[in-house]
Length: 131
Image 1 (cartoon, helix red, strand yellow):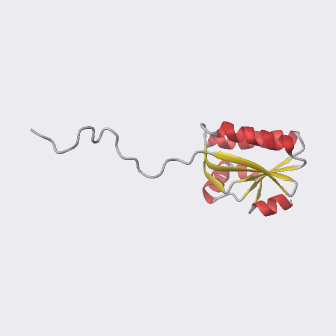
Image 2 (cartoon, helix red, strand yellow; image 1 turned 120 degrees about the vertical axis):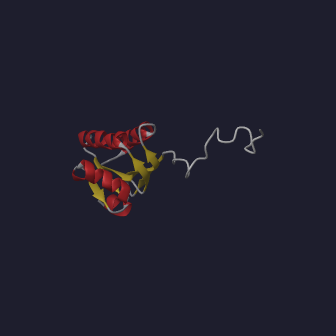
Image 3 (tube, rainbow, N blue to C red; image 1 turned 90 degrees about the vertical axis):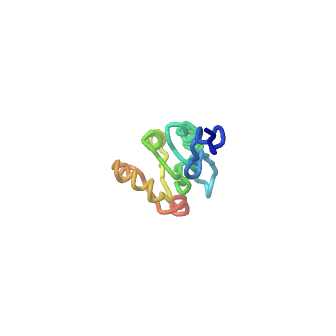
């Protein structure tokens, strides 16, 4: 009996949807304030990159670090922990950590975990930079 299915077909099922966005994290200074812009998925596999960028930002900041959350498409507990630990490190260095432009998915994570109460959250980067 001969099959009409090509050899190897079905061995690798088709993927559904786009690949998860790999995390990137830019860092810049805007009006004297250090701004870190993570983009993509913040999870166990990518948290180290953001942790390093945030440590650099806290070290460079005079009084405030803004995390531009607009590009975050996902954040798990590891990513949230990085932000919480950085907040404490920033506080010890007398630097404020401000989250800006938090998108609905991430806002829900903050709300469900109660961490929205411990972060200074601003509606956009401009208001966060202005203080």
